[in-house]
Structures are given as C-alpha cells and as structure tokens.
Length: 487
Ligand code: G3H
Image (cartoon, rainbow, N blue to C red; front, side, top):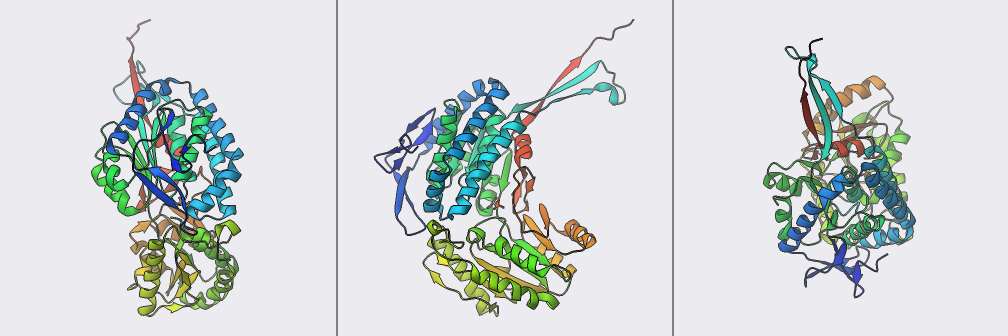
C-alpha cells in the first residue's frame, strides 16, 4: 500500500492531480512518540505547491459535481471497503505514528470505514424542496420556488494528530459525496497516516484532482491555504488558538470547526457512584487524555466526594502504562513538549494546595495517570486543557455551584451529568453552556451521525454526518413565475 506514496524508502509524496509527487527538496521528519525513531519524512510544501493543489481541485470539481451522486457514493463505498481490508496494516502505523494503542487504533479505523459508508448512504438522500408562493400574503401558486442543494466548490480539510484517520475522513467523505473537491492537510504529526487514507480514496476511484494532499509547516503555508481566493469552505479540527486565528484571517469563507474542550463530569448526590467512577476513568484517560472530549474536570458535591474518589482511585491505578504496541491503556503523549506542559499544570496545582492522590511519574513523554483533589479556581488546571492523563477534582457545595464553575470555562464542548433523577438531569442540561450533555455517560463524539457542536471557544457549526453534508452544500433556488391562466 505504501509503494506509491513512499519513495526511497522513507520520503512520502503528496497526491496532486491524481499522481503522487515530490514537490520540494525540504522534508520534515516524522518521529514516533514511542521512542523518537524516525518513521519517515513528508514534503515541506511551499506556497506555489499549495496554489497548484487548489487549482487542480478547482478545475476538477466541475466534472465531479456533474458525476451522478450514486456514482460518487459508490466510490465512497469502495473506499470504506478498502479501509476495512487495510485495518491491520494501518493500525500498526497509527500505533507507531501517534502512540495510539492497538485496540483504539483498530476501532478508529473500523469506525471510519463505517463513517464513510454511512456518509455515502446519507449523501444519496440529499433532497431539495418546492415551495408555493401562495403561502405568503399577496402571492399566488403561479410563483413556485424549486430549491436544490449544490456543492460549495473546494473544501479545505485540516485534521489533527489524535484522530488522523477518523477526523480526516469525517471531513473528506461528506465533502466528496456532495460533489465538492478537497484539499486535505493532515497535521504534521500523523501526516503519514493521513496520506495513507488519501491513497485509499485514490485507489477507490476518486478522480484526478478531486482529492489533493498538502503537507508542510503551518507557519509557512497555513495562512496562504486558508486565505486563498479559490477555496470555498474550511473544515478544521485542532487547537482553539489556531481555530481563532483561521477565523480571523479567512474572511467570508464558511467554516466548521472543532476546537478545544474542558468537559466536566458533574456528579450529584444520588448518582450511581460505581458507574460514574467507571465512566470518569475511561473518559479522562482514554488515549491518555488526548481527546477534545476527554473528561477534563470532575465537579462533585462535597458530601459524596470521598466516596467517589474511593471508587475512582483503584480503577485509575489499575490502568496499564506503557507501549501502544503492547496495547497499554496509557501510552506516551505525542511529544515531550506536551508532557512537559501537563507536568507544569500538575506542579502549579500542587504548589497551590491541590492534593496529589496518585503517584506522579514522568519518563520523557510517558506520564502515569494523575488525579488531583481539592483543585480550586486559582489553579491553572481548573481552566486549562491539559491534553494528557491528569484529572482534577473540584468539590462543590451544590448543583448551582457546579453549573457556575462549568459555565465559567471559555470552552463549551460536552458535559457529563451523573444522577438518577431525570428532572435534575433535564434542569442541568438546560443550564449547561455546551454542545452536548451526556446523562450517565462519559463525553464522546460518536455515534458519528449524532450532531457534534462546540460552543464558545470549542468550535463553530455542527459536525456529524448529516450536519456536515448540510454545511458543505448550499441551497440554490430557481423561481418559476408562471403565467396567469384564465379558464
Ligand atoms: O479529539 C476530538 C475528537 O473529536 C473526540 O472524539 O469523542 O470520539 O474521542 P471522540
């Protein structure tokens, strides 16, 4: 599978107008978070290369949008199948490239294969509508509006390191099925996996120019890409800082963005504490906390906090720590800069009086799960997104204080509420300023046809299969003005 995209063993090429090309003499090393081994090099593309990719995408989109929808969907079905066939091979790449353990890597790939298939099927149900003028005062049925859905043009898909397959395909597939062409820029960490995915789409029969890949330094080509006059949509997942920057410079180009989060797990007096503890540990420490939807703070009513902690601690201590190749639960973070940041948050909290309930062992970028109790609002960990295996516990006196602290965050992705009382669950859901409230479960984006919305600094617009399809098409209206016929 790597043959075409990989030349002289370890320099990966980019898909441009249907062929894999080397565009530059400059290469960027991709190192494994496991031990720093160089896995390969990707092209550091320059502005002119980006320009060419966008031009190819723009030109090819005309024929692609005129390709019958059922044929576009068939290509996606094929891509879904190919991805499933390559799951084992690709999961090894994910383990090495982003340090995701084997079971989570395989599950990301399977989920993505299902995502592409579901998108192809959903795409086939895109519908227009007709509206009669007579519904509005002063107009008759001789005025008839015929509304169709048309693609936007060139869609820029920028994916993050933590889901290089799923969060790339969840942008590319809806764009393609609706007749858009794509310029895909994977995050540099995870770029080899992203290129592998592009090859799957290419092999499935996406025509030349309809999908093009870009690799390179965002500092050099990022602004050029998102401000290019020939792009029509940006779908970005990544940090809030970068998302805000893109939103500032991109002008009137519509966007979908999934950014950071500080998802709280709110645990109330009547909660099933055993169940809550299980969800909290899974939600906080899955993929070592490197998920935008990870539980990043627990807000627990003080009177039951000790009981909850008693249940959380043994579960956290039992988590295996080590290599993704051995399917450890906690694996090395993506790089040492990230683990140093996590450590700095832990140090700041402990210095300001938080209680460290677990060991805090760091070996380079591998950190054992850390739980901090009695975290207060003057500590950075109360507000910052660590993207690592650390869970702060904030004790609150009542529900109102939990709502207040929850909503004081600049983020608003998801929130979990643990309670047995349906009325309280609804009360809290109404008050929490987030895109999704999970009752008695950890936050999670899936199933992927559910809407996924980030409010405040957590994003813009709604992702999810049907919603992404909707965002990547616009309504085009033809109004028929019929002659008055008298009998
Ligand atoms: O990291 C951000 C992802 O969208 C989270 O997705 O909830 O499926 O882990 P997930």
